Amino acid sequence: MTSSATAPAVTITPEAIKHLEFIQAVIARLGNGSFLIKGWTMTVAGVFFGVLVSRPGWLLALAGLVPIGGFWLLDSYFLRQERLFRKLYDDVRKPGTNVELFSMNVQPYDSAVSWTGVVRSHTMINFYGMLALIDLVFIGWGVVRAVTS
Image (cartoon, rainbow, N blue to C red):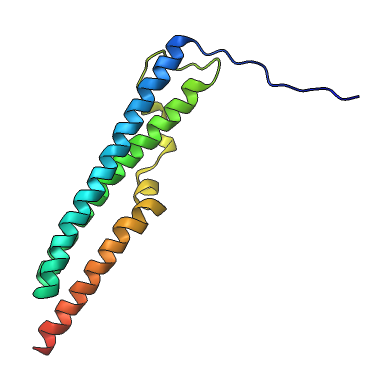
């Protein structure tokens, strides 16, 4: 005997759909902000690296770590906020949710998304870690040039 098991139809109210649209708009803005931060990071790091190629110096290379670290933390903030809003979105979309309608409060999810987890995520390590590694090579090159001069 075959039975066709179908999932029960889930009815989402128009208000809940609007709530989900608001949350999705915030997620999109956070993603766009993260993209812009990465663009600024590449620009600033590129300027430092360009100057270091023509005039290598470990002090300037060391100074180049400051904006990379700053942008890393700022982008991590945006990524963490995005993850928090994704958790809110996931709860709002579920039937029978206890999330207040049109609430944008992500505080209940704070413990689920750790700062250290976001800062050390593959996304952050691959982008900012690579730039920091390149900068560390310039620091080493500058130190070697200063010692041998």
